[in-house]
Image 1 (cartoon, rainbow, N blue to C red):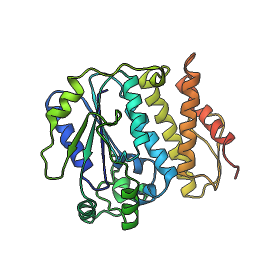
Image 2: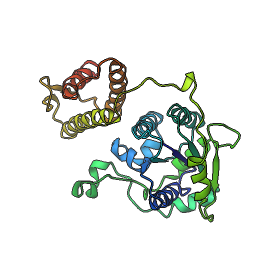
Image 3: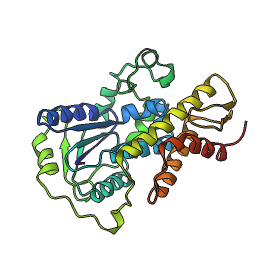
Image 4: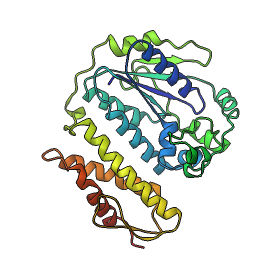
Length: 303
């Protein structure tokens, strides 16, 4: 999984560069996985500005993006991670993941002044609404994305203040390709850094225990996402109490306190515990609904 980690201020053109990269590498015959924060935030049922203003919601989305990237671990396909990636500690985690998978990485920094980024931001016109309230989401069965939603001034300024700029002398940011808004993207430099260099060998600190088949994790997460969607649907219409979930003989107890953030935290904890258990014997997927329902009931406050 050669990976391009895109980083930059809000409204710095990250998604535009991500699409340019995807199109270029597809033309060169590479299989490309474009993983975007613009889709991950609505998928987690967060508004764009409420997500950016809540550190706990940001943690949920960062974890989801990292998990999605890890599902595509291999040495040939290209992963493009289109997100703010503004925390250097998080970029270091991605570096460790790449190193452990014995592949290569490149950081693409969309360099722009704060004033110019704000000018780009105010050109966006979409409404910052919850995914379930979107007319497009109701009519079309396709991922909702929020790239044309503007940040509020307060959110924009806070994100700029928190941004930790990549440095080429940091091993987790290197090799670093810098792109100004008026630049033609240096795709050849990115290609060489990904496909014409040797990956660093993993060391003990970056070695991860095997998690089983990639497809297993994908199916596991799909099952849990479906259950969470059922629960949040019940919460939305105030159908509190016991809710029957397909595949589970036990009902889930839908509480008034349940929300997307809480359920996604439980999903991450359940994935972690399941992956540890699967080192010896993977949990059969048909048992996951029952086990996840029991896990939710045991870790939430009753109605």
